[in-house]
Length: 287
Image 1 (cartoon, rainbow, N blue to C red):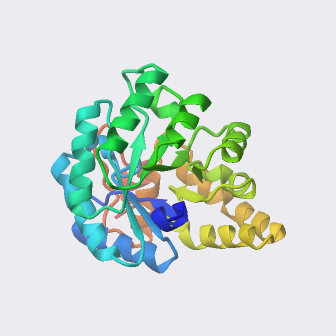
Image 2: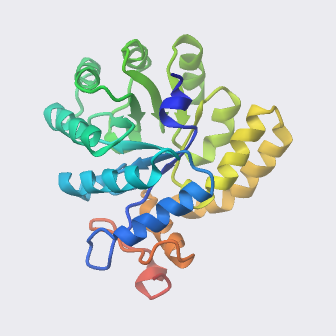
């Protein structure tokens, strides 16, 4: 199977809807999934960074994966964020996600502890060896404090269970080089670079703004695939204001939740500390 068949093409890094007391809002989750499926997402990333994964318990993550997998069955792939800085814990979470119905796994570079590149390789291989689900690597050095070196990515690309990478490093020259020398499918993980990544061979997107812009993202992907660069540029330029608004802060979840709540897609814009709701929501501007 191709990476597109395993993971989808127009993926959304979902927020996790929460109630004002911080508990997960299952009605909000159902509404968000329905919105994303209706607007053209074919891959749903659950419990990733935008889903506030550092604040979710294992039980909550399993609950989220089960609920989304049930609702999206046959309509979109469900990719579970499982990465931690501990290999044993990450393997356990991979098994739990598989049992909960995930179609694939998102494996972030181990954060905070800053292992060597050999340690990163061993960690990713151990996780990929321990699951039957396809694995998408996640390279996001501005969050983890550690970038995957090109040689590491090349080595991991040879693993039979590692099929893709979500690239939030933003080094387009490196990405183009690796797309030409490995079979790894690239997914753009930085919304303001969606156009150049797709135009230079990326398979698809894992988008934060896609919580609100899955339809334009689908239009962008289609325009690139049909060689309609003028339309692709027009779509991309039309999305710059919302991309800027949602990702202006270091964490996109509060702004994205505020917008979703304002539109009535989720009932509340609540986030868990240490994240904080946007100023407008704290003053009553969000639900």
